[in-house]
Image (cartoon, rainbow, N blue to C red; front, side):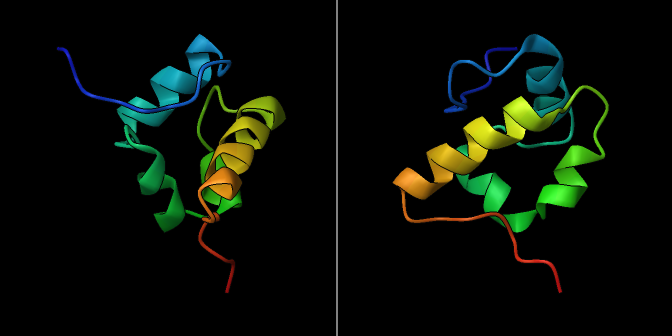
Length: 67
């Protein structure tokens, strides 16, 4: 199972497993989810969300806005 991913380093293993298990294997996938949706995944905490947020910001992207 050598799935290609570009998730930033520094994300803990539980959060990485949660993200990949939910289908978030590429950074651009996170633009389709709100921060709250991602935070509800088991194993995802504030640090992982901060790292993803910062990685998205460097690309000029953000999480999906809450409606």
